[in-house]
Image 1 (cartoon, rainbow, N blue to C red):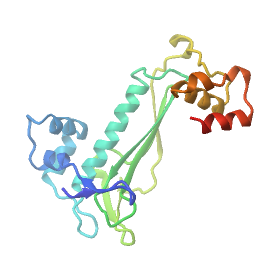
Image 2 (image 1 turned 90 degrees about the vertical axis):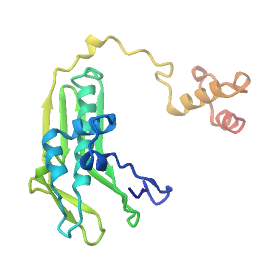
Image 3 (image 1 turned 180 degrees about the horizontal axis):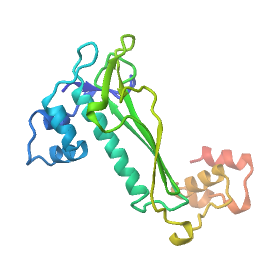
Image 4 (image 1 turned 90 degrees about the horizontal axis):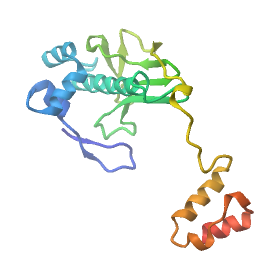
Length: 223
């Protein structure tokens, strides 16, 4: 299914064809096909497996639409685990993005950004494309050669909000005290470096004593 490349600095690698196979030759005994179809949804699977969706220049994009929807659903599943699932209490925050890598090595940018979402204190805010395949309108950018999607006829996406019962911080118990509480990032990094170094026992600098730049430079140079 071609090659994909995360950036111009990375080597190309083979693309996964599971989404193509799931739409064109679904195998009930293939757990990957089953998982992808569940994330895509039956209505979307029926629509995309039976219809060719073309961009305005005639390029087929139904597999890309399926990939975008699956990525967005995966983002939502992660948000649900963090918020409603109880992974985060009122002190925690989570931010996710849904994106698809396109195997178009002629362009410097091979990432299609689909949606983003934030989980915090009882609210899940989301902005981007949705999960209804019939609302996708593909438009090919002639200058970049990249496909862009309108969703429900719109290029600007509003922010939607879902709420959930958030676990309060006091119900989760106290946060374990960090051994680096009140210590600067530089001091903490040096302390960790000393702990990991084989020679650290002899040269470890105590963060409680403070440190001057001379000792800091000597410690970094000697490890």
